[in-house]
Image (cartoon, rainbow, N blue to C red; front, side, top):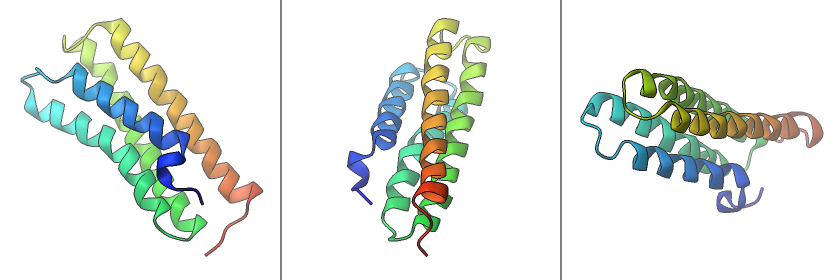
Length: 120
């Protein structure tokens, strides 16, 4: 396993988290802002944490959690324009990036499960 910093999915997750922080930095709905920021950070955190174990099975578990956090961010991005927290186009673009990341995480999971096999 390569260091997590070299994984494209981790790099993309970091960029998405930064974009979420920038988007909502002045938002006064602290509960909403905190939740989406935590979910965005959780994407890269779980990739990093899972890579710390010398086990594909454990990495897969953390990747699935990461993908769930990605979907949580996507869900909240649907609400952003409805709550007047950002323009529809901005939310759609971030949602597109999250969906692409989720797909990439899924592809990595498939690689670890099928192509590479699982080490315990």
